[in-house]
Amino acid sequence: MSSHKIASHAARASPSVVKEICYGLTIGLIAGGLWKMHHWNYQRRTKEFCDLLEKGEISVVVEED
Image (tube, rainbow, N blue to C red; front, side, top):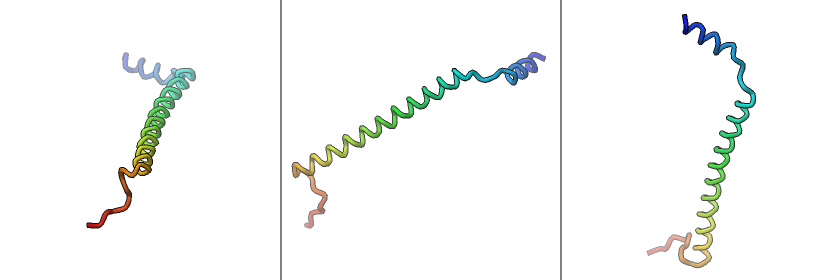
């Protein structure tokens, strides 16, 4: 009989709006931070590649033997 009380209590409880907003903000900030870190890493690699091209240390042209 106690499982019936638990189930009916869970069905009657209304969701906490403040808690849901906090969960959403937290997940959004974490996802945004991960995306921003990915973007910074991609920018860094592109900048390093362009710097190496300007210095002449690498080339995008295939050398023929």
